[in-house]
Length: 112
Length: 117
Image (cartoon, rainbow over the protein chains, first blue to last red):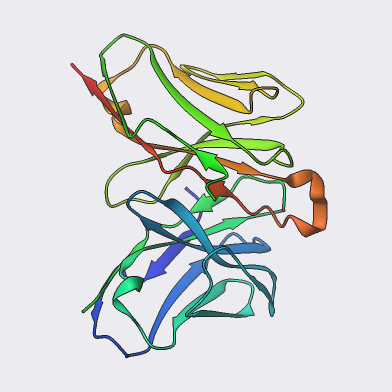
């Protein structure tokens, strides 16, 4: 298995509070991605990174920001959580733009 | 605008029979396709992929077929086993775009496969 961990694995928070999810990899892969999974939508790309400090928006980026200060860590921040951000969040990594993505175990977030 | 669609939310098959999961796409720029399997409370696991220069790729019990003219791909599992019961996602990427693609994947909604003993 690719060395990807996500923390926390579960989180319950209240509307309006900030939340940060962490993705950590030990594979030294250049590319990292954040997805959310919701019923009826499959997985949708939130943000991605193609190098340290190099990030860009995905399909559903509103309300989210990311940071990547070192190769192994990619942080996803919900500045002010809303109930619509209740979801399961997955991090993925790949060695190159044309290479297979490998996923972490996911973080289940509930915003009350 | 759903660029990748899996129109069957669920599929039920008997152990030993063939499972066929289908996926359609609309973006003609897609040239690399993948199938992922997902068990509950776990992350998606890569299963098999196919490039648009091929029309078939096989790996053990799993075969993916690509029909570019119809913008359709399918995953065949033969023979199906109870352990194959999971959610299957197809995904597509436009890797020929090179640097502007960044390997971004567009996923279908998923199909729940249940294999009965």
